[in-house]
Length: 305
Image (cartoon, rainbow, N blue to C red; front, top):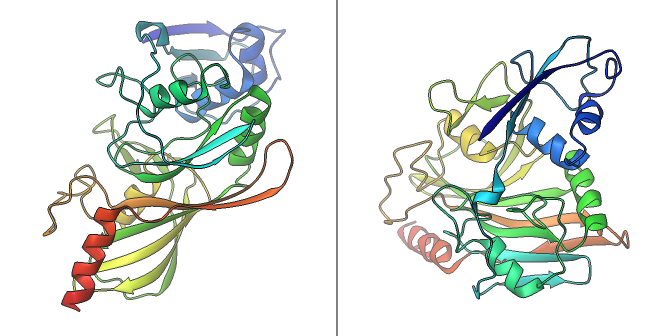
């Protein structure tokens, strides 16, 4: 990863940060710049800010530049569970264990490789060379619904909807412990962990993160939850649930991951997406059933009850 630094001159002073950087870095789209700011890969005076931050004279801008060209993307014939497709978007039900896009340690065998084989040349290029068409993401071991943009117009519109919290995302999670309340809202800011940069953590210096939980079923030592997120911070659901003492079953990053079912990786499934179609404006409600392994665990718990 390259690090680029420069100072804001008089011409760029008073502009929104994302606009100022787009003037300085014309090869980067505003959507890409906003994503980098959200991912804390663009800093002002060493601190995280919002894309709407108004620049000041001599502000030091630091950009942690991605180097996607190191990875040669290849289309791969990986089966896709397609829930919806038209000329503008593709919505897939991602299986657990599938990484969304190539990166360190995962040069191929990703959802992007599979989508490239399926869509051929019809994919938005806004996500960059290693993220073509990717509007949002799911963690490797989170299953469920994911939207892929097939053209730039769809990509820009879907990115705006997600940024403005207009896409309703509903998840199903099995957590350790028996939650007493039937409904609760977790409103805790999340930032990158000071101790481990690969992890996120609840932090006062973080960005606001809001998670709504509703109990669907209770077992002796576990609770089945419906989770709706207002914001889309990295690892948000996993961090919030672990913070309140009810980690997602199988999550070895934010708990010890131990469970009697032998499940590896978090039992978290993106079950429903509700949004306006990025071109037609038609309201879309798409759902994906729980994976078989998830259903098997629930059957065992119901039998024990």
